[in-house]
Image (cartoon, rainbow over the protein chains, first blue to last red):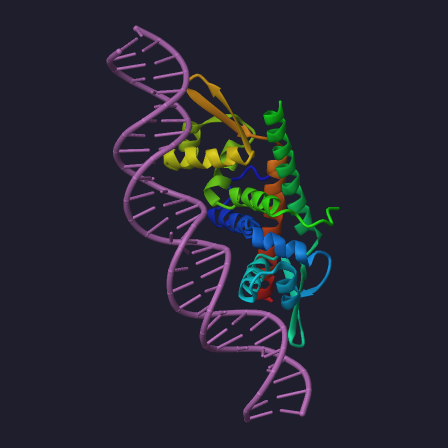
Length: 109
Length: 109
DNA sequence: ATACTATATCGGCATATAGGAATATACGGA
DNA sequence: TCCGTATATTCCTATATGCCGATATAGTAT
């Protein structure tokens, strides 16, 4: 159960992975990809983000292993790397919803 | 299964929670807290970070609900808010280890 | 109230990162 | 080859964030 102190490199790597999910644009991209395979252009359309931004954020998600990509002629098709990506997002989403609920209840009494 | 598009506010909230885990110092603090209740001073000692930094990072972890705190006389005792905090970290840690392994294998052939 | 301790906050500085415009690269077709 | 399309990268600027020292605040005791 990892009682050992994690190495600084490991901590930085894990932190970097969390940071990769720590941006609303990237989360929107993950959601826009969903269970499908999507080209960059499709994601530009679906999110309304600029092409350069989409490409750059996808590069970061790819570098951290959250999405996989495949060249298809002129296109590059992105997909979620695996089901655990969604699992992470849903875990976090659940926390946020629970916290929001708690806050609301506190306000409403 | 949330097929609906998340609201921008929700995305930003979730992203903020990921960002809260997206820093090596904060991860070190979570690890230093572990299963115990720790005062700020103890965490300063255990991490070697400046007191101001420890206090500020703990404030962020508290604002995002990852740690809980309790006043105890002069001290403020922090603890992990719940077991799911570790679950998130371990999920991410597993991803990183798997990716590192993949990279190493690719290099080594 | 004063003095002391533990924690929180402020201010400055350095770095990281997001976003946009322009440019570069990759690929396919003629 | 040259052209057109799709994607990636570069450069720039604005903002966010981390760290630290100094200071403020909360709590306890005398």
